[in-house]
Length: 240
Image (cartoon, rainbow, N blue to C red; front, side, top):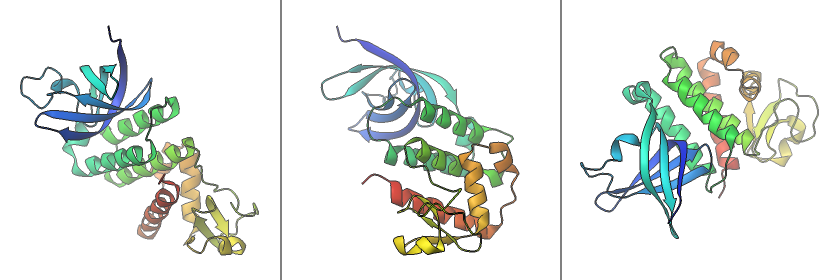
C-alpha cells in the first residue's frame, strides 16, 4: 500500500491541467516546496476543492508516485480574506509567490523560510496594516528570503573592499553582493548609485525589525530607488 504523507503548507501557485485537473505549488512545513497534482479538482463534485486554493494555508495529504505527487485530502487552516478582498494586497501576495517560484525549485525542508512566509502573509492580511506598508511586506520578505537562501546582501560595509561606507558615494552591486564604495565601482559597471536612506532601510529589513520599518517615513524618491534596488537583487541572484 502506498504510504500517505500529511503536512501543512502555503499554496502559492496553481496551474490548470486538462479539463478538470490542477497542479498546486505548496511551500510546506515538512518538505519545503511541493508541486502536487490534484485530479478532477475543478469539478463541482470534487471533495478537495474547498480545502485548497492559491493563498490558502492548508493541511494536505498526498501520495508519491513514480512521476508525481497526488493530492488525496485537503483541509483549510487559514484563508487570508483581507488579501482576497483588496487588489493591492493581492498584488503583493502575487509578488511573494513569484519570488518563491523563481528561487525555490526543488524539495527541501526550510523552517526559516516557512516561518518567514507565515509572518509575511499574516502581516499582509492584518486589518491594521496601512496601505503605505503593503509594499514593505514584499521587500521584507524578499530581502530576508534571499538572506535565508544564502544571498544575504552586505549593507554594513563595502562588499568589495570591506572599508567603511561614505554616505555621499555608495552603490548597490548585485555582482559584489551588496553595497559598495566608489573605489570598488570598477568591479561592476552596472552598480546602481543609492542614497543613505536605502542602506538604512535595508539594514532594518535584514535585522527583521518590522516595528521600526513600518514607522519609517519614506519619500517617493527613496520608494522608487528601493524598488529598483530590489529588482536589481532579484535579477542578480535569481537562479538561471
